[in-house]
Length: 272
Image (cartoon, rainbow, N blue to C red):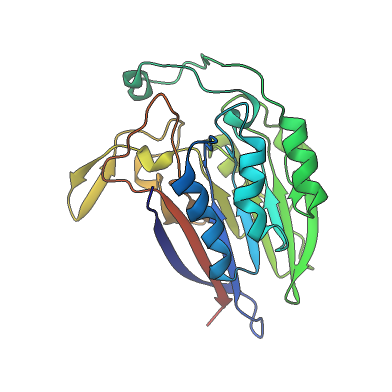
């Protein structure tokens, strides 16, 4: 598996702040057999990020926790924030791919229960911070960051009230982290005046079609509009939203078309 590095510069920090290099990845869907993807992930340390943000779906197999920890090992001494997605809780099962094009009625086809607690404990043991239904404050290169997150909205595990509240005026940056960017979460974080939101889940559509000036996704697998299915977008007065198209895929749908696997390096800069 080869991957595309999406690079973005975003002038969002207060004047006088140093640049912050944020590595955002999502939807690894790792299995022990994905040797090329594992090597790609290990190479991310060469990007020298100041902060790592994962928006979930680390694993895609019951035996992949050791695989994920090995792949991420070169990054685990870097400050990291994460939430979980549905595939961190349940293994994948076969689904008719055409169902992704239908309106979501809330039905979920779940595979075997995974050892999410083990993955969580081992990530936290290396210093990464779990943002599932949590709000924290950290400092990176002298920049004070308020970070809040929700558990997976696709499984309806999210409860934004647990982290709700207006942006802390004493911090330099307020970010929100969630796996699946459902409208209810984006709207709630926007109402609290956060600066920047991170999400995954969409796979960028996974299969895209040629469109005017580029490509277009057919689905986001949630109620996010298709035009926001990957990359950095902004709508009106809402916060910036960065959606990772992710690295992997379910082993039952092993194809990406006009939508390469990706990781993102977002360089946060001071406001001009």
